[in-house]
Image (tube, rainbow, N blue to C red):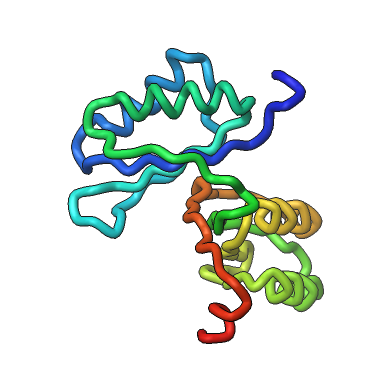
Length: 173
């Protein structure tokens, strides 16, 4: 991969019809681009779905893919997101097998530090939900390796551009 390759975030607004997600992912396959993550869900407009795709690529490669996606049937629009001007979040479910009961208070402190939520608990395992930017999720998973990491399920990144605001506009809120 080229030296200027970096994580690119692409958002596509598409009609909620069968086969759209397949056509987009198939386009990536045909162009030999790997999708790092993909997330799709209903948008603010009935009948439209927002698909967020992350990929490692150069600017030129991402631009080429965006133009190709924009030409697909049922795609209403495609835009790149600059990570520095976007709110990017992921969700992860992390299952731990903490072992000795004496480590549970330490684990709970770590979960609290990451603002995670325990969603399932049994005598053998603990399942935690953590959401935030991808770096936060990665940091939590790294920490969890010290406490008997068993399984991880992650959503892909979802993102929206930030509004350009001034300090005066922020003060009005």
